[in-house]
Length: 223
Image (cartoon, rainbow, N blue to C red; front, side, top):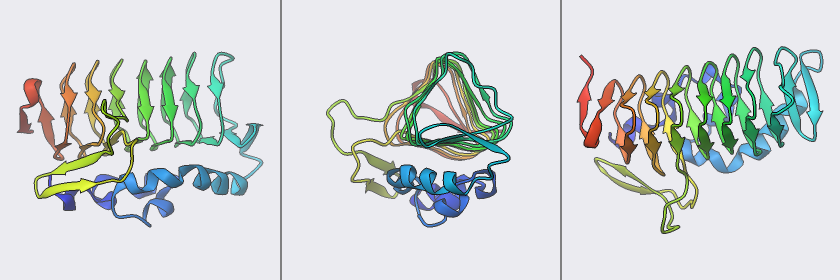
């Protein structure tokens, strides 16, 4: 993947998130992560009261969403219309969940955008990440957001590395991507639209749109 292919408008349909106008201010997705808390506070104040309920400090949930008693909610956060929150989901703040999305059993989410229709249904960790429209993370697939040596995260492109200047950057998952069960998306991983990641993969760097990431890091184009 080249730097040009990692631009926000290439990876995502910005009509499929409440954060669309905000994301347009940036070139690359990771640049938007630092301001999520302020964005959510701003959006929350403007949400129609007849559609959204405020269930805690800076927590706005659409009235169509069922909140199981075992879910832990920490603001600021917004959950959009028709989304599904399942048993023991844990929201740690600065989370924007779109319409008709799923955050499932024992999932943990912090400082992330989950686009409309995206699914993280079973035992997933989503930290400092963006999950695109109708993308799906298989059971126990995780976004790792901090390097083991605690160094600042670099994004590795074909045409050179880019310094994020950030210690915490998880994964950027483009629209329509399928991540197989048990996969780890290492810090600064970027996956293009409509890609497939084989189960039990440890993904580093970038995966182009319409590609398959196989075992041992082999990447092939979809037929």
